[in-house]
Image (cartoon, rainbow, N blue to C red; front, side, top):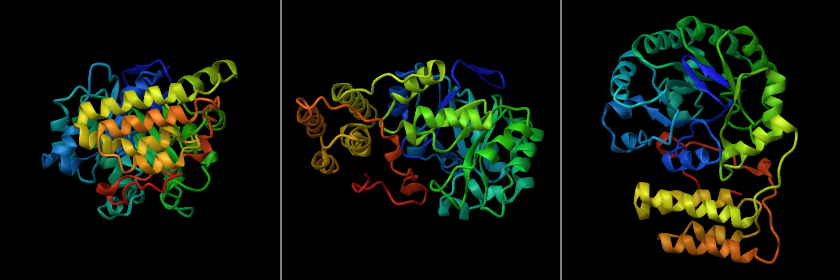
Length: 353
């Protein structure tokens, strides 16, 4: 059981917000595998208050998509107040402030991980959110700015004083981005320093790595991000492992392609065929990780229609029909996740492994 304010969730695993990834179709696929608490994509408060249609689309949810959190990106109280006023019209269960995004364009605006260098300002922003929000407020941070400015414990204490109901922390610094080692000692120190729930993240790629996060940090929950890319099975397999120390066999290619088709169809229904297919291209690569179909992966990044993509998925299954091929569970090969171009990074490319 994970409790954040008055929100109680029967699982300690959380589907983390990922820009360009955590849309409604992605969340619903993971919900069907036992994910209890999920987040929308990171929402720019500036884009939201300017009425961006793409941003408003990110807020779409269904009754099956609950409980649901929304994460915002902001660095001034007036913008936060205006964003909260808009979000109050939606039925979100909690709201998170992102002080962890390491993308250069975001940081240059004083948002995301830039707030790690201004603890007092961050505390003030959180105080505003707690006062103005009618739902639980959480904060997402990193261990610090760089190895010389590791201040996660100070920020955690300030956040607690501001009245937040929970803390999400990625065990790397801003300068590490999504590479390098996760510092479990810092995560454990933050957990020991506060009374509010702490949800740890970083390298939550396999049931074994997730167990390590729990054991070495004492955290209340684990945020799963890259580990869920093309792998919704991580939720039931992790819960099984934590409860029984065993992991059931990995899904075979038939299981994988069935979920791929469901995800693709959901994308087409949500975005329309053209955009839905384009958006699914990167997922094709993630779902087929560990399956020797490199040529089909290249073709998937050229597919433009639902028929073309469905045919490629059928070819994945057909190519392995006589090989008894199983997903190896090699989540260590998950590509480094980076936010998409609209947040300042290059878009996903066909070169991902």
